[in-house]
Length: 505
Image (tube, rainbow, N blue to C red; front, side, top):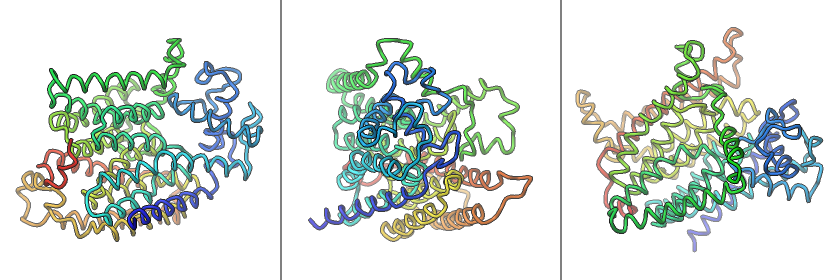
């Protein structure tokens, strides 16, 4: 009873922090002609409510795709339609066709922020609570500590409540899928992941681990017996779920193709602002954008992504345990973020979700990765006037996670599972690698604080206007690349002890 009281307090604290961030001026406020991502979400409500479904993804006189055209899968559009019905009932001006563009009022801001919070309360927050309480390792106190740190992760809060997004819906559905798989409900987990994928196409970052884990389980159970039955059951669930989500667009092949064109905008090119991935960082030294054709950029990023994600996926396919699955989720999402095509800053949230799943197992590295992911989006936060919420939530997360999870006391070489590192680096002095990692963490945090302060307080040189965004993205990239190597090495290291193995399926 006392444990669930603490859980309730954690959830309330998470809600309070979220609502506090939402009081900040919204993304794009009073900035014509596009008015930011807040207007994008409002405009989708306008479009889905006033236009027939067949026009949602097509450029028409009533639907200018250059003005925040829908570019997410159907489940996002259905969500916008539900919100639009509520908005229409409260104030028809909020979704009036054409006339509502750039609409700004205090009441509408409260409504839009409330839609994000309600979505979190219905989908994301319950999934976090159940995962932490039933699939995290350790005592009830430790589980509550992991829960609080996950709920206070600043990246998701700042993007969804400051920059204005609904990432909590797709991430929440993906977490429900992880929870179901962890409890052995494979068909249910497959359904939830299909829903996540039908809400935001970026969930492809997690698709290979789900596929390899489930297929590996089928192979393990025998493809002539239980394994074949499990594969057939999962296949039916996946096909039915996707068919129901996409049903209105499947009657006309042209409709379905247009949706696919909108959600995979290859024509936009390889680069999306200053992102902490390989291509943006490499472009600082070699002007890829200028010397390499668009087609070659596309094929190169595809090849690099496949090569980066392949070792982790094959390892999971041959060893389909829940521990390997969690590591593969981190490795796959990092591979996609670092090497894939058209990566946005907020795509790092797809890395952050599986990192939260490892807060109990590898707290120091998970906290480091989560802190870096938030830092990598700093230019986006500053653009939206979120400097103060960024500082408060980042410091709060760092304090609570270090205080509650004691990661600096759990960074011995064995606890960080760096045995394979020791074999690979046999030529180095016989010192504890955990001590090296701890000092790197200290230096990294200090560097992130220094760059954050400099970005806010120091004007860049006139001839280098993008100096701080480039430094931030490059520094974050180097840390993310190191983390990617680390988690791949850990995945090929010996499995954790029996205590962790009890979560294996």
